[in-house]
Length: 352
Image 1 (tube, helix red, strand yellow):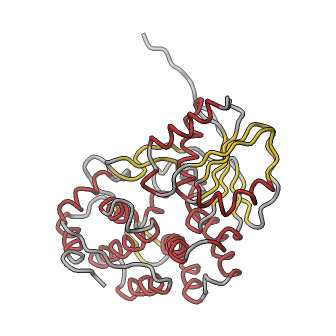
Image 2: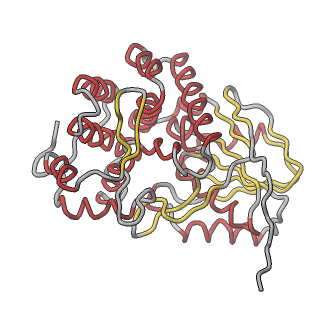
Image 3: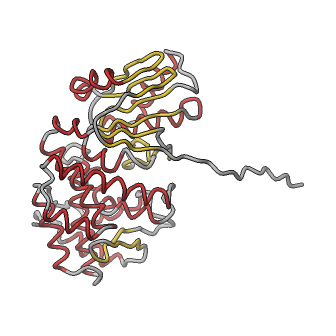
């Protein structure tokens, strides 16, 4: 006997991204703002001045990638249960990518899913992490290996938050802007070479173009079955670097910057990218003092860590390789010896 359970249906997960001064947010429900002590101290009162809701609770979690764990998720959801949150309640992520990822994940599992809103306060989260619905936490095997696709109800990007960012955090976000341009938009990359992203008007333009690019990709491939995986350019290498350094030495965008250079090296060895283009990308990263060097202590251990990447499948490693500026391809057929040769150039001394 066979019984068919027919669940085919159209689901509209559309939402708006608001770029500009934070507007009033009206929510006819109970709300919890998830933040950390540093961001809360700087920006919580500003958000509260714009928020109208039935009840508002503040849940503060520890700051940093090392706290992006299931233990922190349990702390968040326990707070929600203690304050009797229900399925109509809403979470608001006030912070960078770590806060956004954890808030979204908590929302995705609390009572099988409630709404959340992103209010990103770092450049990295404004141009990338807050848009697209990727949520999750890290574990001992790697980064973001536990999570869910759970789209936000809305995203509010206010460049005002960037005025309090340290220089390194700001530059880490620029790495993701450069990533977007290398992957999908040569004209954008050409513009970035001339622009000064420390200028308030230029950064607004860069944010808008990055979000439009991310929105285009997500609308075509919400669950990362193909095209969206290209946005992980630099991340396959970068995630290994972050894990090897216990998420303490490099900010995420810094790890991605180094990972982009490794991916570019692989691309030139495969004859896909011209050395001149590789150097243009390197020059743009260095313009914002982003790291482009790393010392791999053990190339075999580094290589084996690739297999924990979410994009790898059936013992094949998927690499996102730039063909040239403005276009990338996904490859899972690259010979190990070629990859190892690239890794060896980063072993023993800092590659510059």
